[in-house]
Length: 213
Image 1 (spheres, one colour):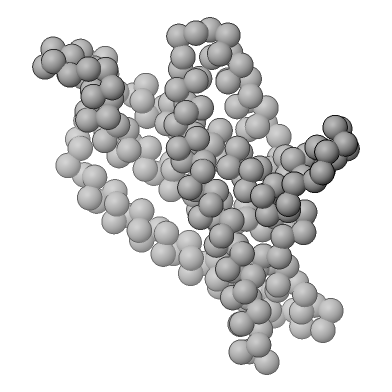
Image 2: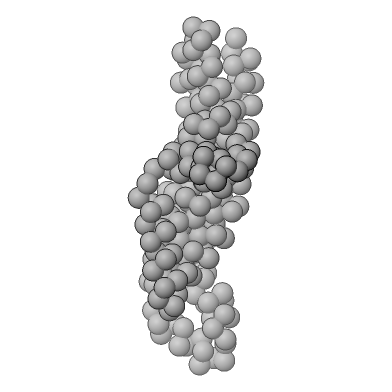
């Protein structure tokens, strides 16, 4: 029985992994754009972005999933988005808002003197940001980012609320057969994956140690 259970859980974990990777692929760059908007000198844009971030961070991801999946049909009589697409949109928006605040904290922690020094050397604002500021920001935000990314691994289980077959669903399906241990077995998958991520982030942090600023 162990092998069939493992194979079924691996199938569910494959969907979990897809949600995780696609969320990161979209939310990391989107979070940077949201960060720039929240730091904009154009006050209406800044206020709008910060209000949006406040709403997303202040409401449950589960609620956002439900709204994005059911909202278009119920509010505007539009066809419902595919379940997986709605999941990625909800996760990407949610985590982009959290990442944006981490980015903002990292950027604001860099002293103005470094911007000015870069400009004195003849670098343009964009060059100063990407060559001098961004590498230091990456180092400073690595710890909080790693925490959010590990949280994302566990949050992928929320996708089942709109019918996405992921590892928790796979484990829970065995309860109907009178087996509870497969549900606990799913914990081993999460622990192993999060352990790998923890080692990876630790390695990256050590590689970034040459940035002392």
